[in-house]
Amino acid sequence: MAAIPPQFAAFPAINATLNGTSGVLLLIGHSFIKRGRMAAHRACMIAAVVTSSLFLVSYLYYHAHVGSIHFAGRGWSRPVYFSILISHTILAATIVPLVIITLSRALRGKFDKHRAIARWTYPLWLYVSVTGVVIYLMLYKLFPA
Image (cartoon, rainbow, N blue to C red; front, top):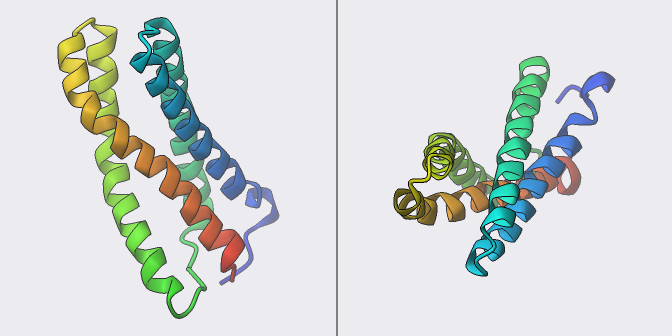
């Protein structure tokens, strides 16, 4: 693998930080709604949407300029990495419209419909956020090229 150009070297860590931050905001937001703290829940979830959106823009910009990064791990790490990557990628594509619909229903005050879809959106979004960090760690820290 060719070296990542220096002007893009910080992007993987920034992207992982944004993903991890989204995951933390999701967990905190979920705990707020479980305790009936709707305003705090709303603030956390909007912050999670903003953080995830910043991640997506940063991720697309980085990969538009750097391209694909090949996984250098061998043995057991390859099937583990690619299993996580495949599920992450499929769910990442799925989560975008789910988040938009879930957020839209909440902002329009359609809370019954919001709750119905949020039951699916929350765990899938959390999985995507956490596995994004795991992919970063495996690709750039544990098994770098």
